[in-house]
Image (cartoon, rainbow, N blue to C red; front, side, top):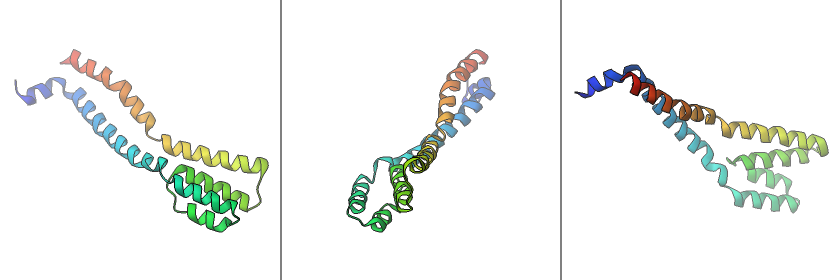
Length: 131
């Protein structure tokens, strides 16, 4: 039995599984690239906090400006809010909103991977039954 005959027996199921595999691999690559900077930049955050504590607010915000890590962006938002005179509930609200936005950004495509992980074995079983 040739490869084409084997592919023909599972036909539509194999095509769906192949497409899901390619999409999952693409999602994994995107998530890896997106989450890579999460653990970086700890030194720059520490330096920015030291500058802030030393009274150099503009220097601290400039040091965090090009940061790619979510913690950099949240810390920069906090510094900007404090620099504008926000405090208390307004500061907490702004930081909660920024934190939720970062969380949403970091968890995008995760649901796609979860669904693929749940559906693929069932499709494989269906392909076995049909083939």
